Image: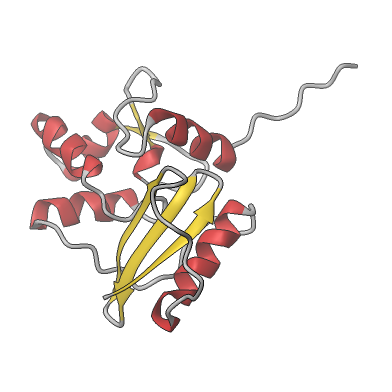
Length: 158
């Protein structure tokens, strides 16, 4: 597995992957890790696409993914990929779509263990009442990502 650290507007982004796909994308605070001087070839596409996302030039990702998790977690993460850019769903909506409303805590837990920050968009899942609940990267990052994807239109003064 290769690893690269890049700057992002939300901190230092770590990307881990190999020829089988990207296994981990995570974020940490600035100062936690040094930015990489070189980008392994196998990770260059992921770095490019994440930078395009942050620049507002990309709304979906075209990467080979290889997250490690249980069968249930894989199913939950796959369902996250169906949430369109700029849209949100509630944990209950996601749970209903997966077919078992009693599994809401398990679904929320799987979302929290999502190893592919932004690319598998768990930040698009919110509380039933619209609250920004439960985000491993921190609620301030979740808020930033949602505003980045769906900025409020400028109000006209006239």
